[in-house]
Image 1 (cartoon, rainbow, N blue to C red):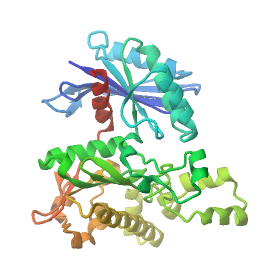
Image 2 (image 1 turned 135 degrees about the vertical axis):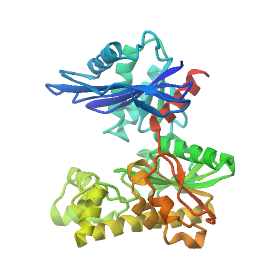
Image 3 (image 1 turned 120 degrees about the horizontal axis):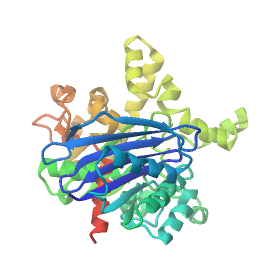
Image 4 (image 1 turned 90 degrees about the vertical axis):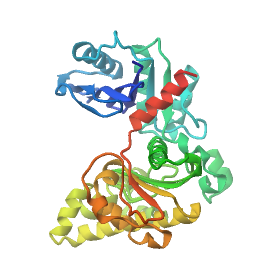
Length: 408
């Protein structure tokens, strides 16, 4: 057994997953949340791996505990106690490495990186680019290194996969000196997912990754699309922050920057008000009152024109990016959908691609509507472009990258 522990730390919570890298099966997972509140909560689930892959079934029901969790260090002790009492035993199967999701690596980190004091300083310094994420990611790293002081810790950056973007792709058309002084450029996000999905898709269709032109739609509450040529990210929808690009659950995506000037002048909204407005009160929730596409579909069925318009705006943006990336790539071999919406909303997939017949894209309606799980083809046999649904597994990708560094 070769266990790797994966940590995804937020400001008041962290998720964890213990993966046996010999089988890539999840052994246990958990969530520690409401850190710093008078009463926190910890959930721990143990799995019984079945077969030779990452498929698992519940061995025990999830155990939930409520107790004070003052900080991340205390949270990690709660996690260790859960492993000790509920299993699997970390004494019998200690993790050989700990992998950490870190949102922003700036232009400094382009591969998984062994955590050192200098790397921690850099992650902290890059918090100016991701003030809501990097400090929380760093808090998890610090607490985890206390809990597991004798194993390597590896930082895996969301932005790293997009470090292959060309200068003409990541450069904004603003004053170059101002951009350089404030590190303003397109960074891209969801890189761990895009990497995992593109590599999984290549293996599934049985073709070398280096030979494929791919478009990956990661559609969840946050959403992005990436053009991948030969395994390299060459264009992606998110930019300096995750706000740019597609219409999302609560984020606006692309918008004329002058709208912000107008709102500031006419409505008196402050910088913080505008930040909150575009990140938390826009997108589908701003258009339709809900960020859940299931609610929006139900509203459309009931004749709600506001919901219909919201869905049409959402689809229009997907098509716009699909067309743009087909042009950038010069065509595509594979288009994949992943994440919560991408994997579970066939009506989104069909509407997004229904105008791309000119590029050889043909969706098979019955395949697309099928409710089976796992990776699957939803295009017709005659389609020149293979269209897939590929369940993402960012934790497994982090574990794979962590193992590669630990063994180096």
